[in-house]
Image (cartoon, rainbow, N blue to C red; front, side):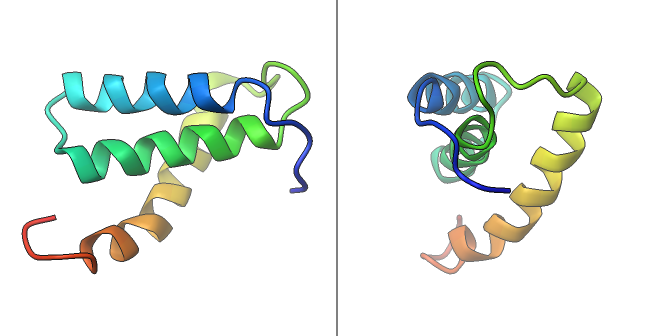
Length: 77
C-alpha cells in the first residue's frame, strides 16, 4: 500500500500504545502497536474504511513482522 496522508498517524500511534499499555504490554511492545496503528493510518484517506476485524488481522500481521526487530534491541523486550 502507498502512503496517503500523515493526518491521524500520531493519534493512532498514541491511542494504540496507550491501549496496549492499559492491557499490560511493556513499553517496547506497546510502542510497536503504536507503530502498526500509525502505519495503517498512513495508508488510509481519512478514517480507514475497512471493517475492524480486517484491520485487526492486518495489524497482527504487521506486529508479527515488527516484534523480532523490537526484541533484537535488547534482552527482556
